[in-house]
Length: 493
Image 1: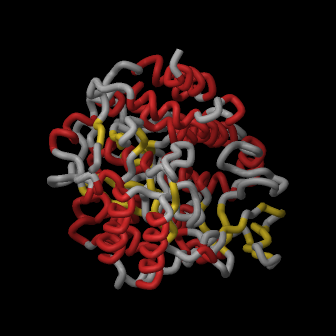
Image 2: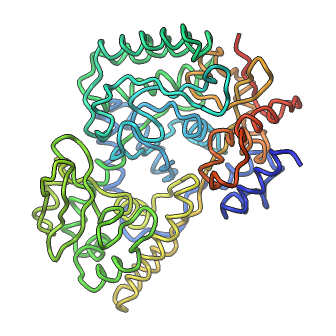
């Protein structure tokens, strides 16, 4: 048995999502899986009109009114978006290739709208404080990817929402570090050339913009456009999910008929909810040991602060030992959310967008695990009274299994033959995808798309103790041993 085969077995054993996907679609083309990514058909509890207005407002601020008008028309026609991404500069192969596949689903509109979480730190998995480089350090494949920081290390725990704009000095220090990495043999000539071009071209194009959010969206647009030899298949529109939800919450918290109002301010519903999701992934522990209740606080240093509900106070302690607290009322929560002293949690974002307004949310490995649990927790909490039955019925109909988890169609072929994941830096550096490449992406079998991603992502699914030494390098070598044209192989010079 090859390690490729064993890896698929391990992933299926530990992930019901992977197991079900492989059972149904292992040998099918990605087009078949993409065809399943359709908006839910049930009527949401609340109108989506205010959601569309909030999205249009954020899009106008970041991309201008003309793009906002196009996005609004597309979302009204297809209320479905990827939501497993993080906001900020994105060079994570899995999320970027997932966005590309989402843009290629049947009947996809001209704009691909991505809602990313900005309450994560700058040094989170996707590493928006700099670039992820898919290049073997000193030829070793087990350390992928490498990281090249742009933002200063002192800001690594600052949330992306609170990040300061980068400046010319940061770019030049990153370029100098890249030169040293090349001189010391840590990166290849191809990697150094490709990354330097991104720093010069993409980062440089956004240097004069006044906010990190504007800079990040401009850099991501340049990265996206650089991935294609011709016109991209769609326009990328990346928005932070929390400001959109904050705008909606400013209304919902004051509306007795909203889902959020029931969950937050009807005592018996709130208590049942806090108990039902106590300890659940992406939610909270009532003792404050993990997660946060409904919102994160934001400290003066831009770091997120976990909160607990203590009586009628939402309270927590920041990294300097300072206590943050808000009365758990509309009058205190609304202004704090609008000026980002409070940031909606993952639970609150999905309750506001998906379960109240029926926005179909396409996730990854983790969302597929926690979103059904959150839905059931809400339904169970609303079960405390018959008067909440109609609301619970609407929530129960919202789909929670839409996913693009760990699927990559494009790999980078190394001189020794191994095939490793490729992010936007590498795809652009290799000359970009041709129209024929783009056309072929959705014909890649689902099984192969999982395997291309595994050298980076398998240990997200399988406990490290169950993986043999050198597993990433072995899978990459075995992936490279297949020459049947089943994936797009970048072969940079």
